[in-house]
Image (tube, rainbow over the protein chains, first blue to last red):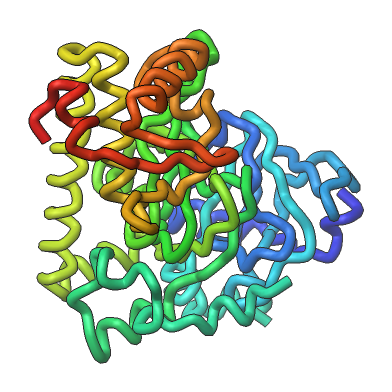
Length: 115
Length: 238
């Protein structure tokens, strides 16, 4: 998905570590994960699924976001997120909360993720 | 975008602090919470969490009002609670590991803090007063839920409406010139949902209460004028 191209993608080793540490959860309902202008409450790794990306309440893009990491950088630096991200039903998502990110940060495997 | 500014708001300065589960916390404990929390302003209609989704933390309301609703099989939404400053949301799901059983939606601009599950569980283990306050909160929630169930089965609509107005007076009442303004903007549909009736029935009973002089209305704002009279009218022990 073009608009998410700037967001980090994980390799298979990183995916395995994350899914073991933060087992994926199924989203059954279309939900706003992050609102435009909000500091994300948690970061998200989209294992499998699709999102809608909106800016100023207008949809900018929609599509497959599998493999994308969203909101981690903003969460770690307390920065507002640029878009509203809506997860579509049936998506599997690993939830990367602040506590988990601090634990994962200690591992070398994720240095790239946190830079 | 004011994310950074909001996240500099300290717990010690929070308007809802004395009502919340961290009200006994001081010094280092409060600083830990203050540094770890994420603060955002939710606009009217924005959701904090959605029924059926996985839980991952707890929300503390610093300012504003939030409605907690459950969607029925028939697609109808019922308001089960109004959360205000000092209230916590999403805490039950932390301990049951079940998906969110309700949806929380801002009724107006609300400042809300979020703490992730791992942090909350760590604080509960390390700080007994937080655990005690949380248990106390859960106990009060259960009491309120039981009262609600009893009201639905034992009281008629008029009594449930009177009870709602008296409860709103306790949680959102502002004394003004001898009467109490209910500082909460609820639509008639929302009020009807809380007491389990149709909006038309609610409007009819509100008119009745106004005619009797127990309440007054100016625009969309309701005032409790005669509390004792309302209690007697509805024949409830309060």
